[in-house]
Length: 232
Image (cartoon, rainbow, N blue to C red; front, side, top):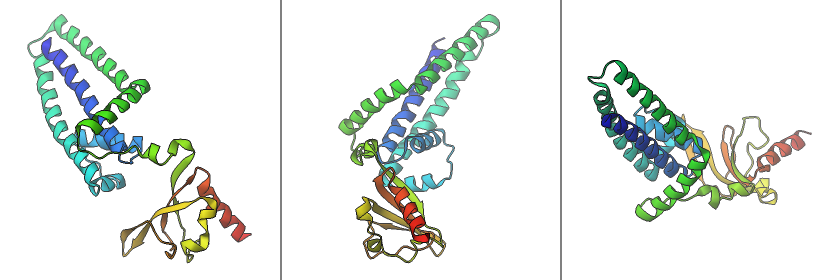
């Protein structure tokens, strides 16, 4: 029975570890969904190859978090399998059934615990303060810093080859009047994607550019409205 409860504790600690990693990734600027997915992938050792994975590999802090999750996941999976075997070895009949029932309800409780939004908010606050106090990780709550909960947002606008934006300089757009700030531009050059951070007003927009805009939530619609006015 001790092995069975040990297994449940290991599962619980694994979930908490993934949650800590996900929150740490989230505080580096990733969305909650992407942060959670990447943390689970690293801990389980699945290693999905996605565009978000590339942004993590090239980010020193995120890479460090992922490395810790991979190391913990390797130890956790091995320990879980060994404990699972010990929990059921030599058991037959009624005792085996009782252990299966206990394991089922134990995993169910742990699952409900991990899915609770109230527990998530509580854990996020605790983990954020703990990471800031006891680690050297320089993490920031970008949602708060950028005012994303105050009506502002960061959006991606893909510039098509026939768009009215092509060939125009950022200074020509006068986006400051619309309270729109272009933070960066992703540009495909020679089959590779180049990154232009904090572009100047002399930067010329090209077809297939991806503009990273910071504005009010309706700000990205302004460029679409300008397009309609231009065509009209």
